[in-house]
Image (cartoon, rainbow, N blue to C red):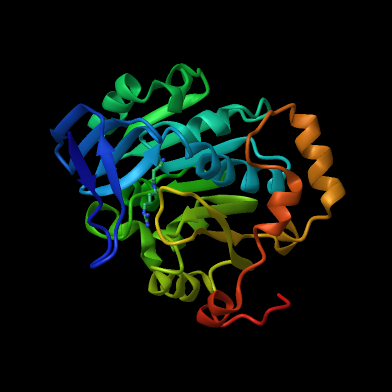
Length: 286
Ligand code: AG3
């Protein structure tokens, strides 16, 4: 029996037993591996970095989708950048009021392979009539589209390789341009304990672009090194300061049944530890 050893960090890493190798392919863009692990379920890795596991994907995908959508309150048009496994799409599609979902994924092989080997991630939502799937470079899409969105969710790999550009100032600027009034951008931003520099550069880039910006967190066991940070850029500063009652009302009204997200978790997720606040140069009471 062989092992999968993650290569993301020098001198510190996680190991999975490969109980069954399901797929191993070099796509046009990256090295894609899907294997079965008795404890974590099916695991997908790209270029040696674990992207998602069946056991804990709900935490990440619920937090990327429901936090901005419920904070917005009136989202009709959602753009997903990346997210080829379909996990974010599944959570976005749970919102009945959303009329259109555009997903721009660079690697069609990720989509096709995950449909086959991680079917629980997308749970059939690649067939949702509201979905427009575009196989293209996310950066190119946001810089050239004339469309506008209420919520943009960037579910990318780390800023090494193909996704590096999805952390650039030009990308955030282009996303800002594609947002309707009251729009919200959220992006995966790595684990601050291990990738503090990433949070720091994103903070600098969001500053000045958005009326309100911040980060929120959730601990996802397969993303090694503590809590995962999500960047938050909003056109309306109130979206981050909604009273619990408003979120509860929206959440109950949505009829969505979750396993991680709830409005208490939503509000608490924006509380950041001192070392992160310090890194992004924000006072603790913001
Ligand atoms: N996207 C984010 C993976 C981040 C892994 N990086 C890390 N551990 N720092 C995953 C795609 C899930 N839909």
